[in-house]
Image (cartoon, rainbow, N blue to C red; front, side):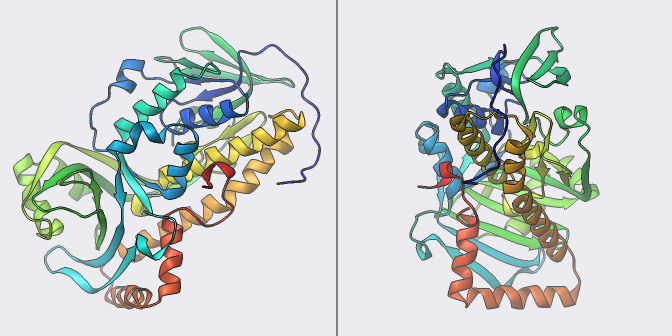
Length: 417
């Protein structure tokens, strides 16, 4: 990263902004803010109208933000806007079992006190993070926002990239960023193919109120059809991400709220006292999809546009934010050297940095889901013994904690303290 091959010095041209970012969810705005720190301008294009993005109600989505992701948001001036709505994750408990029999006596327990850096991460609802990113963008003069419009065409030439919007408007920039999700039109128009498969599972997502405090403890309960994650939110509230087979999930989703709670209670357990539903329920199909390349001429992909994985470890957004931090660092260093930020070898530095890490994470989540989402007695015995052994190996346990906190590997500067 320190001594890259020299690229052609950027030749001046007319452009609306340095970066044209397609996708105004979370990763796109974060990249625009990170690029602004280096003096790079961005136009963020989103299909949703601004009021719908800014005033979203709770839709079931909440994120387990690893410590490294919290550091990034803090460095971008976003964290102070959301900190009061975030819940620290102080412990993680992982167990295996069946709904009708409860958890196995073998489990893994990770406590943040075993590392020096503090909480492993924080839980934060999507609506608070999305609103904070929009507010931060509105205050940054280097960022322009285009809402309620979609990209219908893109063209690349020797000096830049042009996009055409559904409204008829045309924009031109130096580099095009695809932050437009798993079905990325940006990637498809660039001819980037994808590898992946469905899991035959659907996530049932909701918020649950409970009588007893959760004490900042996150739970992951593996059952044969799929895992149930119980994730602490502020107050006596937890977010659940409950993976079931597609057919079972469809049947449960069609139940009344009272009936849904009746099938959830045996799986949830009584360790938090009486529970009741808070707000609406949502479903999300689960799959693995990875772009065969994260880059193309004058184009880079970040977040789900580059890689979408099973939520089993809650690392989807964290992986996307690491893309953002890595790409921002590559672009910042290139701009300081006077390089064309969209030159092929500049973009290759980003891909080399992120591709192996994301492929490894995708494989790990895929294998974990396959290992635990079954009722094979031999596999059940092996994984229970494995969890019990890890629980008695402090060095290995601390390694898992640091991994969950996002502190391993080649961290971008924005994710360092």
